[in-house]
Amino acid sequence: MTMETILYLAHTEDDGSLSRVALETLTGAMGLHAQLPGARFVAGFVGGDVSAAVAAASGCGAASFYAVSGPDFAMSRYASDAAALEAICRASGATIVVAPATSRFNRAIPGVAQRLGGRIDTHVGGCSVEGGALRIQRGYYRQRMIATLTRAARPWFLTFDSGVYPQWDGAPVAVQAESLTVTLGDELKKTKVVGYKAPFASAQTIRPDATLLFVAGVGWTKKQADGQVHLEEAAQIILNVLDKSNASLGSSKSLVDQSSEGHNVFSFMSHLNQVGQTGSTPRHPKGLAACCHGEEPHVVGWRFIGERRAINLDPNCGWAQGKADVVYVADAFALIAKVSELL
Image (cartoon, rainbow, N blue to C red; front, side, top):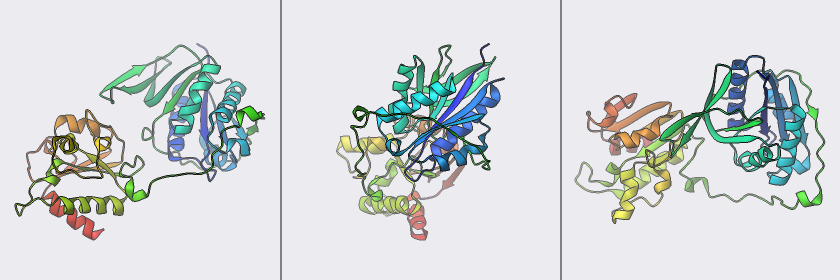
């Protein structure tokens, strides 16, 4: 069996640090190294100034550290990133390349795999070693199907999604990174980042890095305890909770479908917020469902939520049938309004 060389790749953020998903992927790379007997473990970094990033990962146990840095590599640009990553892969002799599934790397790494005659699998959700062979898990068809894959082709490039592993938080040690020289001609520097344009934080309800996922069900648009519909008040309560807790907003299918059926619907919610069998499968440490009944297709989207809680007036709802860790039997409208007030 040929000895594998595992290369961990990361790029710096604007402040020179490593992102959360980069530190999570480092944990995964270290675990993979521990499971592959005789494997060699190395690390590579790309950015304007990678010293802080190298220091943050220095205690990971990599045998060698490689770096491509300088002003030309500070920004996210396909041409310069691909050239830098190719240089690191060739210098390290990597057979398995592990990287975070960031927008920057998802754009550049497929081209590097093509240049090196390798294969790539993106959005990896886990890995294991069986019989000395690496196997990865990957979701298909909105993650309703989880496949286990292995490849004989090398180099094999893998980009890991956020939330698969805990963040690496080891103590730094003294290391020296080997600086690689990559010369870029003018034809590779045509693209320039001139600034950032983003919506106000209050306008963004889908927050993948949020600690809490708050999911609203169709009950928010129904008659409340006084027999009246309070759509505007419900919208304000939900937005207040999102704003004060910095939670991410999810929705049941029945709620987002109301817009196509001519019923009242929240203006800040769309099918992009839908969580479940025909929606998204988010990864958050905690999840709270309010006015959701816990139907199986909706709960499918919660498979990677760490701690699940729900609020429902019906003690026999789907959430109470072993699908939630804690179920609060209460009026979600009144309870969340009180939580919003306390926040």
